[in-house]
Image (cartoon, rainbow, N blue to C red):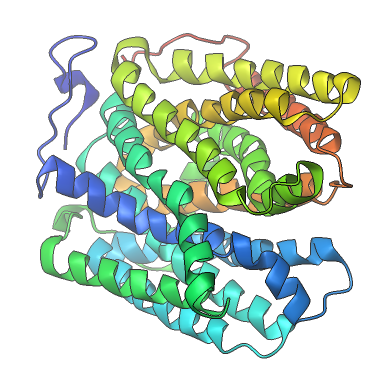
Length: 418
């Protein structure tokens, strides 16, 4: 395992010993995580068609296609974490990818909206295991700033998916019924699973395998929730990422109803994802020099200030796309310098139970984020102002949690991060 102290000097580029070439390792982990993004973003252009097909009474109900999946994605991570700590990463990954692909085909065949939501829920369960294993593999091999750097590179590649996924969904709908926006997920899962089966060795060392029993699982999760820095950054991530979830759920409505950009929605959505990708890459270049705390705390404050500015301008000057969009892109670029750093900070103390820690972190952030995301997205009333106000509230709440976690001190570094 590469440890942060193995770096020869601050700012040095980490060179982890990986089982695959760096480009392939980053691409494979990104592909695993991208299955989750595909499951959320590919059908965004189809949401209006889904609402029409199933004759939904309230247009905001189309958001449930997203939130049903996210609901399934949350709690099962608590199960997959200990399982992967016991049996290893590769087998669990392949099982979950197979289930994900089967669920995608099941979504295509759903003849009622309730059945579609149920199959989406099942697909979220399968994706939760994929996410747990992906992060655990990285934590098996490295920690600290080195982990933050690799995760930033992963997220840089991963963010290409939200750029392309809505366009892929739109393209699919030009050639086939909207149901195939779910079928494409199954094909992606089959491809990713084949790659892993052929190329990825097991990364969990035999001596690090944990017994699978209730007492051991309880001890693992007890350690997670009693580690202040871990539970603190879990909470902060869960709250602030509610803004990201709410954007994904309401974006199609915002650009269609507020800015009348139905035909070019995929391009505007891609621009926001592009800003996230660029900021993730920037984080991978600077985090080892400046530290996870300094970078993430700075951009969290930036997120709050940008959200306030955008909300004020939209309320006073009218909802003008030329003002809203640049500020919104900068606001969401902040996530690129929070996600990987918050995750690495939370996972840092728990290397020997990386699967359990990854599961708890994923459950907490996803469940909390989906709840707050739904609360903010459901406030959409034809104006972006209520959503921006929600972002301000989420940003301030996340900052308060970070302040409590760090005992009132921001921007600092700790010995275990240096």
